[in-house]
Image (spheres, one colour):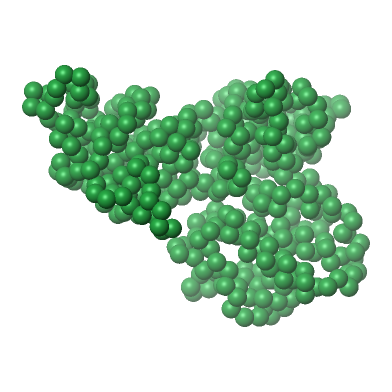
Length: 449
């Protein structure tokens, strides 16, 4: 490092401490950084230490305890370190007059984009040389997609995607060659009008090499054929299965701008982030899927329902699935006319839904194609089954008492109210029309993504 200037360091310390807290809260609202004392040194590099009751960190002369309502997942800890790593890098450059002018790119764009980038590819933030000489390819790709999301082409929203070639060994693909005249995959490309027609994000992707250059256009399904026999860590939405497979090996990262203006980020075989409604979200899909599997206790049923749920969410269609702990409980909150075991002669009338019950009576959900389940979910009401996956009701209006109040005191919507109430009798998986999937148990939301 070069000689440092006499900047008002106390001001910078307070500013960057505040930025650290804001960055953590953006992604991890359940995490609090509590000041517990002074650190042993005024280091610009965040230092972590595990303690008996959790985690602490030292930065800029202050010691923080990381307080959480529950244990952090591996990805949440990784993201916490990514936020601190990016801010530490910026701080170090600001106090070094010889380096400050060389690091302008480090301060370009939205800070949260850099935190996501540092999570996916920490290489640019490992040391000073890396900061100066290693392109932040993921941050550049995010910037391209952000600009594209604000652009239309022939009065249509832009859809596009990019595959950032990883630096880890990939036995199935060699590093792409660099063609003459290759351009950086950066915001400058968005000024080329025809750029947005090069790839659609679903079937075709732009391929970026290790230098951050746009070197090829690939058919994502063909590119991932070599991975077809590999298991994915979590069932994806059908339209993005190839995108997940593209990131199974080699440390590759895939980013897609969807027709809804959402940015999806895939890494290590799963979707890890999405940008929607003006903010980033860590999906933590693998951790949440494992929790769902453990709660259901029937792997085939859990996998089928989860896959259907993410497909419905992708289509922005709502749904509610309830797995009862005890099948006998169904009669307690489902109208008799909605129960499949009731014969038409006892409960039906001309023109009523129960005239169609024979189509699904005695059916096991695990034996039904996912497409059929998705079609059934279009009917207003919930789909109820027992732990053996035997269908008990579909399109059922659940009778669960008075509206449920949210923590903020606002009455929840009908589907959320039903999910909370039904979760007292088993596991409930709710799909919102805004694209969110939520798991409820014992009257509480276990997770949402």
